[in-house]
Structure formats: C-alpha cells, structure tokens
Image (cartoon, rainbow, N blue to C red; front, side):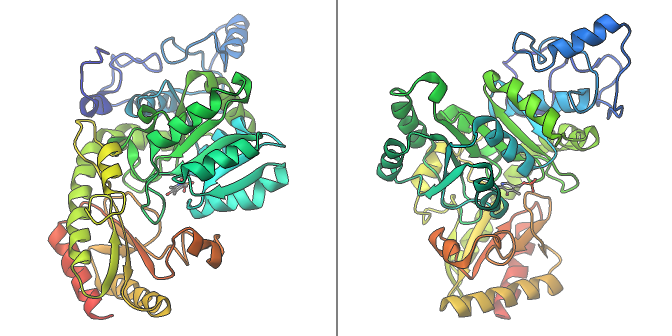
Length: 430
Ligand SMILES: *Cc1c(COP(=O)(O)O)cnc(C)c1O
C-alpha cells in the first residue's frame, strides 16, 4: 500500500496505509492521541525506549517506536511528520510548537558560539528579531546580505571561515522577492568542496510562503526546509505549529533539541494539519492561486496602484526564475497565494492611502479581513511596515525592499469576483 506510484495529491490524503505510529485497522481517520506518558509492559522495554530515542541506529519512520513521554515522541505527531517529510521529499521531519520554534531549532542544532550565520536581507520580522536580539547574546554573528548576489556571498564565505549556515526565504515575506535556490546550492557545493565535512556550510530555507505544493527546495539542493504550519499547511487558521525537514543525519540532534528546549507540537495541534490541512493543500492552493492571479492582474491595471509583486505576473522581475523553481506536484507552474502591492504616490502619501484602504476593507468588506498571518481560507490584508515587520527598523526595511506603503494580501478561497469588487470599492475611497 505504501507504493511510491501513488501521486502526492493522493498520498497527502491517505498517508501511509500502515504506519508504525498507529494501527489503522480500526480507524479511517487517525484519532487524536492525548496521553502525556505511555504504559511500559516491563522495565526492559522502558530501557529499550530510552535507548532507541534519537538513536541514529533506530529508524522511527519504519519501525514501531516505543513511546515513553509526549515531549520525546508520540503517535499523532509522528504521523504528521512522516507525511510532511513525504510532501517535501525529505528523509525526515521533526515538528515544533510554532514556526519560530522550528527556525530556532534548525539553527540551534547547526550553530554554536563563535559561528556566523549569513541571512538574506529580507526575512520575516520575528526571524529578524531572533537574529538581531538573541543570536548576538549567544555569541553567534549574523551578516545580512543579498543572497542573489553570488559574488558578494562568495566573497563573504571566503573572508569568514566561521560561516556555518546560509539562511533565507523564497518567496520572501513580504516582498515576494525570490531566491535562486539552485544558484545558492551550487555556490555552497563549490565552497564545501574545500571544507572538511565537519565544517560544511548548511543551507536552510523557510518554505512557508510557497508550501511544498508550490516548491520543494530540497530538490533544488537546499539542505534543510523550515515551515510555519500555522500558515498554508495548517490552512484553516486554527492551530500553530512548525516543522524542520531534511536529512536523517540531523534527526537525532533535532529530536534532542526539541526534548531539552521543550517546544513540542501538541498532538491536539498536530491532528488538524494531519487530517484537514495536508489532505486539502493541493485543492486549496489551486483556488488560492487562481484568486491571487486574478487580483494581481486587477491591481496591476488599476491607476491608483504603483506596482504589484506576484511571481505569477510576467512583470515580476524574477518571473523566469519563478517558472523554473515554483512547480506543483504535477509539474505545473505554481506561483503561490500571496500578493504584495504599493499604492501610487510619494512614500508618505502611499502609506496614508494604504492605511485608508485597509481601514475601508476592515469596515466595509466581507470578503477581505484586516489581520496578520496568512494561508487561510479567508483573504487577509495587512501592512508589513507597521505590523508583521515592525521589529525591522525603518532604514533596514528600506534596504530589505519593504516599502513604507506596501500592502500584503494573502488570498483565500472566496469567489474572485467578490474579492475584486471589494478592492475596487476600497480603492475608490482612497
Ligand atoms: C509566520 C511565519 C513564521 C513564523 O511562524 P509562527 O508559526 O508564527 O511561529 C516564519 N516564517 C515565515 C515566512 C512566516 O510567514
């Protein structure tokens, strides 16, 4: 039943017919497990369970794990992890309580005091805060660069031999700039050829904006993918979660890190993405993408809009790159569900106009909701400069390409005509 010939769309619904995490004989939908500890039939079995946990000799994906305590491992989460690894085409997945916990863990196992992290200059606001407020306290240096500038990256890697991780998002939150994933991994392959295996530079990519439906970075040579499950993978806006997907060799450290720092994904929060989120991901994303393209085209043609960024528009500066690396499970172009746009006028006027637009939408629109977060059934609008990216100082926002008046739209699954009508009315009021 676990034949790989079934397509991803089918496998995201059914998972593994026989999972070592659960006996599917009685259930079609896996139950939510809710038990902080597990009965051990003998002390020898208890000892064996502790022996096997985070042990590279034991494969918890193919053999039945001995469950001991929720914070170590547990079945609902294990099933979700197997399906997430499958969706991204990775060897293993370890989940966390939030996207930020997943990012902290991925970098926590790869970095130590004295190391340098190289980050793309545009990242999610809390990721920026983690890198600038907390990593320096741990003795980790952070350098922000344009990761698409291969010469600058090469120069930095040659100058600082303590660089151990290169980190980015593609598409970037909120500007929808893309990173050339193959170009980046080729550069690191070149650099790693001259380094001892122990000193290998790892690439970590936040794939939250694209989801595995639109892009699978591991296939482009990236080492580790991180996700906020809170967004499109969860999909219904009910639960928070995070995931790290990558090579088996990092699994023991990720499990130990999660056990000791403690940011486990509750089984009650693992269940919705397992049962509702992943199975409907292709269905939702196809409709969200149709809406995103319709809305992006509408905004681009509107006289009050200065410019629109959507990887699916030919006007996107990296449209050709988008066509190469953003592909769904069937190989179709999949530019995602987020749109970024800036109103016409001077920056201060565009910002005031944007605030007015969002206030009109907040009070007069049924189809569009003023709220942060993204990747839900509902279309959400927000102002990155004052909301999601508020931790980034204004001068750094400009360097990162975040316009003072930039507006981010996360498309839901409403009827596109309703979205356009509500936007048209709100733009008329600006
Ligand atoms: C929301 C988000 C995160 C953080 O995820 P949480 O689940 O809110 O902790 C990280 N990266 C990106 C790109 C995000 O949009």
